[in-house]
Structures are given as C-alpha cells and as structure tokens.
Length: 53
Ligand SMILES: [Zn+2]
Image 1 (tube, helix red, strand yellow):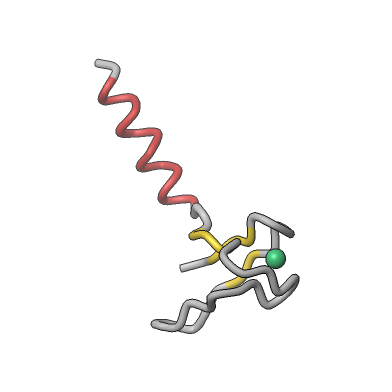
Image 2: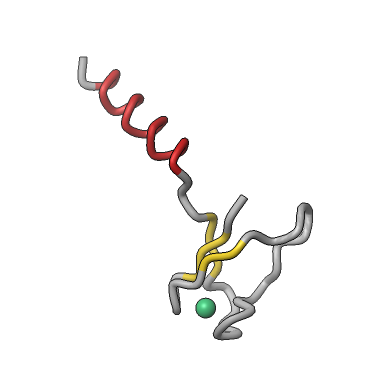
C-alpha cells in the first residue's frame, strides 16, 4: 500500500499496519490518502465499462 500526501504530493509506502497521521515530508496532518496503484485504476476502468453496458 502506498500513501499520497495531497499537500505536497509526496508518495511513500508506510510499514504494514502503521499508517502515519501526518506526512513525513511536509509534516501536514490529515493530508495523507491512499495512493491509487495501477491495479486500482484497471479495476475502476473495468467496472466503469461494465456499468455502461
Ligand atoms: Zn506532504
């Protein structure tokens, strides 16, 4: 899993089971969200395609 900071766009992979509350790069709290990985994008595309049929 990767996290993405919406404040500074820093991306990193936290150690399993320990998601930090603040960005280690810019130290902003609450700015971290799960980064989309390639498989997520594929799943999203596939489900959108199916929904349109
Ligand atoms: Zn940041």
